[in-house]
Length: 304
Image 1: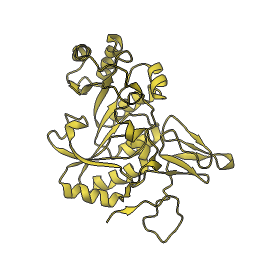
Image 2: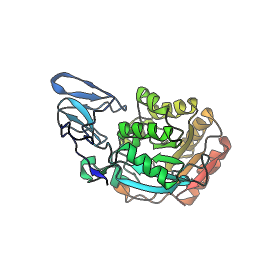
Image 3: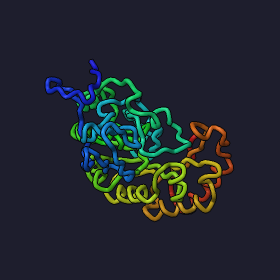
């Protein structure tokens, strides 16, 4: 039976005690903490929650609000991630936790990513229970997906370690906005990644995502160097990242890492803060595909 999460309840009697201290933060004066998981570097007073909505200052310590609390669990075709060149035609046991360290106005999964973790009444599932369920399902892989898995870093790490011991593959579907040190540690247990490359313009990342481009590019290059299978996804949004010049820059960058890396060009549908935007025209997607094929071996159109 799944047990309810008990956050911040300091009782040693409970084996499922979830006062789970985060692994990447530093303490400042007056019990203020600075999170060092991602390039947001949130500075939080007691009781404050980070921009990711998943990490909270609890009396001078930084704790996870999502540890053991997947709010979406499904068995998906691996191609839905989308990942086409790793364990093709298999199913992946997919979990998602609340929160994201970006704030994209076009988010296609905003009801999960742009809400506070505390808004969800999720059952507590220990990493051991999770992996038992994966094994029962017969899926050869676990995908940490739907929202941004790395803001639930500790839960993903613990689950990925157990999955690796059981012979399962670990897949991250991520925005790649993470600092070098934590990524170095978790990368040891990751077999494949789909990384969102939302734009090739720092201003776009800053204005629409409250983030930066450079760390994402570094994550892509680092993952490749570590031998992790990677595929890239770009959601094409009219008037924001659909110019031929920008699409060419994206394709050239991916090719500079490896021309065999698959590039998934995805169609935008109006939602969240961009309900008044138009659907990406088919002609725009076709143009992006032609540009991609100039530099890359594997280009795919999605959401069509």
